[in-house]
Amino acid sequence: MAEKEINDAPERSVSAIEAKPSCKLVGTDGNVFAIIGCVQRALKQAGQDAQARKFVQRAFAAHSYDEVLRLCFEYVEVR
Image (cartoon, rainbow, N blue to C red; front, side, top):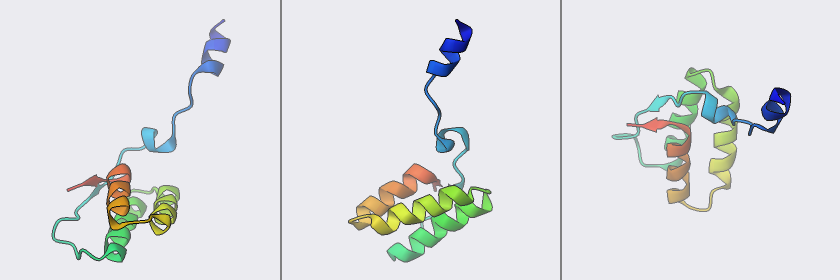
């Protein structure tokens, strides 16, 4: 029975397991590419290279500046 319970447990995403790194966006150039670079750098410095690649892919596929900002909050702790 215990084996079935373990197999039925929902899988956690990598982002739920890894802590979000901190990233200072206040005072940063408001250019969307500068913001993407800042978040990417924070993720890489935290050893989350796969998350950094995923973030950049999603950011470049975003349809608006606001969507990129929402992604930032999803991947890092914005200060």
